[in-house]
Length: 183
Image (cartoon, rainbow, N blue to C red; front, top):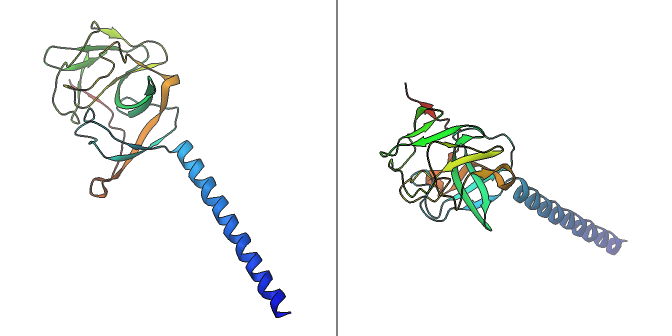
């Protein structure tokens, strides 16, 4: 009888262990599908994000101006800030000031104003179902100012950045830093 009881307890423990493993694997799969974890490479989003930072994105369909978007381009995952959306007109002057619909925007998050590398003509109208994106480090970022990247289609979006996870000392929520227009 005692042997049977020990066997029954072992069997129950094994079942509980198997259930725990299945739950863990399911949780990891669900989290990776809906909340991709990203490692930041390069400095195109500096000073907001640095090389080696770990961030978490969320797959969401509502995008606002100022959100940091995660998107696919030529098999690579890129991260840039949303500056304008479908139908908006974007202009950048020689000093690197950005205008959306003829209003100069205030961008406290950028490293330094710069027109950067650019091969499109301004003013530029953002195509339907697309977003005009720019890196925060304007002098080096490859973004919508170049035809190579262009505007990001809604179909290419993987989501938007939710928060920076690592390094721990720099943990921060990515609050929507909606762009401000100067008077």
